[in-house]
Image (tube, rainbow, N blue to C red; front, top):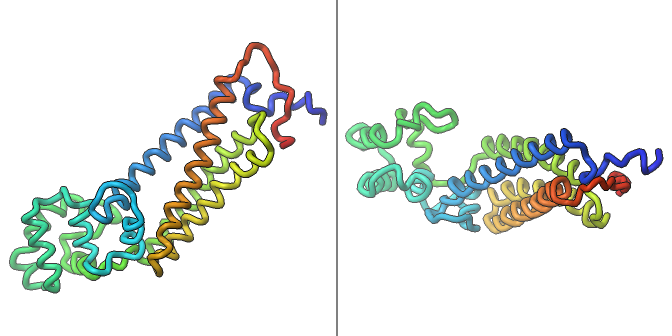
Length: 253
């Protein structure tokens, strides 16, 4: 096939309908990744009780804070605003004293009903705090994510994010004027760092010293996919299009 017969296979020379299709996907995917980042900050980012993602947040999320219970960690972290300081103190004291069924029946159950069961009884995936057994489970020493939930989140993360990176990389592969080594590296990095990210969860589950790998993995695939996102949109909409047809077949790279 002659190179000139494939002139449409590069971003600056795409027709309007294809540009709109690619742009719509990139904008939606970019907004989705921003929302994912916000969700991480509001969940894992509050694991140590402070706003912002840190190594301690990663450790508490996957290895756990083994100095106290999951319930106490949440009450001092992401659930801090869901109850008054007095209520949180009572719940923490009850937890540290062994989370007895006597204390539950006499007083603690009413505190959960007033502050927690609005979500922790109807939202799928959350423990049912109308049941003592469910509360007793989260009142145990915090050992982080359990194997079952870690397996579920890992496969969802790998499958879902991989599809996003595939299509972003496919669109970016049609870019022009990018050195071959840089294009290949940018396409590969998100997949490589996604795998590093997920593996780091499992390593951190058993040894907190690997928590920094999670931050490295997240930063790596965010930077690479962000670069491809910007370049792709720039070449589709900003490069001069005054009748010029780019003769470079991007797929030859």
